[in-house]
Length: 174
Image (tube, rainbow, N blue to C red; front, top):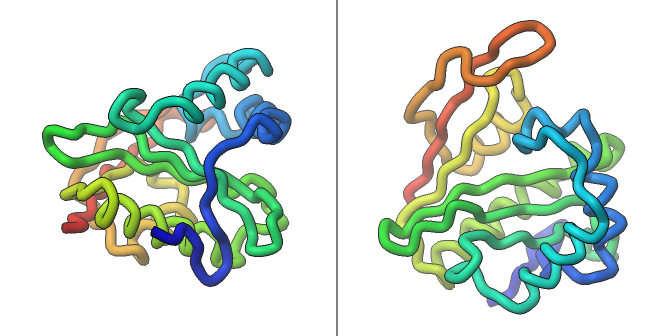
């Protein structure tokens, strides 16, 4: 299966990506959406990449792919996580790191590609994600891709302004 679209292609994480992942994973501004509370070491990220290269989603329960422009510039990552081979579902998360390259269709193109991959290669029944109600861009991305809000977690995430709700979105893909 071809993992490329109109604006981006998805590729495996490579050892050379450790510096990018180090910057992305250790940016406190992103911790609220990634569930991270502490920085990652380069060694930990190198071991993560090593595991990704030598094991598949059936063994690790997750798959991270780099999102790169058709010119070969890495702009983000997309993950399948909490892979459930019995119920044929997985969570999906996406990051376009640099605000200067957002709103160019990279995230929607990457999401289309991963949905096709999950349907055609993994033969999944559904994908799901959670998005804070204050993250309008992500809500629009997933809704436009065909995800539907199926639940709400009230006061789920602590923010600087207080507690915020989180939405559960699902998409049947088979």
